[in-house]
Length: 413
Image 1 (cartoon, rainbow, N blue to C red):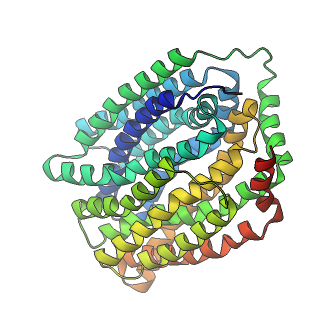
Image 2 (cartoon, rainbow, N blue to C red; image 1 turned 180 degrees about the horizontal axis):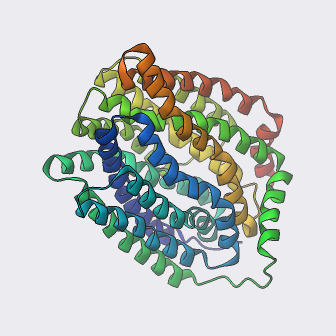
């Protein structure tokens, strides 16, 4: 039971993750433009994203166990610090005459392996630091930090690419790792390390994470539905950039991404200040329905005005979906098992991204070729189909009695 607020320490930790997210966004944007210009293929961009994401997914469960067994702040420091190694490798390849697609994939994969330590430890640390009343505010700010890679990074990267090249973006990203490690170290010193008296075998801890989630049937159903939702969101995430790059340059793409992400800034700030008080399930359902509609609007025509409008509305809705999912899961999971269960939740809920990254780029390339209108229109067609599917799958959230019970269970705790 946390008797006093550690919100100031959370803000310090959050600031480090905000800086890290901006740096990572610079690299992600730069590599996306670099790969598309080199290959002209949405599938190649999707491959880089898949190899950067796959280690995080596969290692999320063991990383969650580590977060419950060892010092969570130390794991964050190791994950943040060592993930710079993959970016450094790509930079060295660039300095030696240019990185190939294979070298980029290797570097991104290495970085992602260490980043996998970060997410369960960071989420569990939030529970260590804050009171239950502060969870919703914290969730809004965490969503805002995640959105910074879309809000600040694209316009900064787009500008820097007009005066320099991708190597500058990589150097800046590498520099941000130092600041994030320092912030985690300061918080670690301030709150100390919780002693764990009984450490069951590692495999048993992993099984316990699955067992605890399975016992929380409402949370499990919500997480499984989220896996399907992540499939359709992943299609949008992959194909938005090649859609715009098919008829615009990198600077225009950066500006468009920033304008769109301003929606996430606005709603993220509102949630960070006020939070949500009730109607979590209904809010989540409506959020995903509207997000599906906005994805369809995003892909309708090759014009930056409707693209920015629908993109803004999409990103404005995203924090509400993330906030409600995070709150309902967090308040129905025992504090001492947060790391293990968040690792399992991350694994299941993000399986859809693997499918999206594996098929969306290939589907866009093939549809673009078959229609004779190029990869941009192919990306739009696949994207609009995913938007319709997203709106339809959201119905299962409001239709599930077990999911609806979650907020009432939390109120009675």
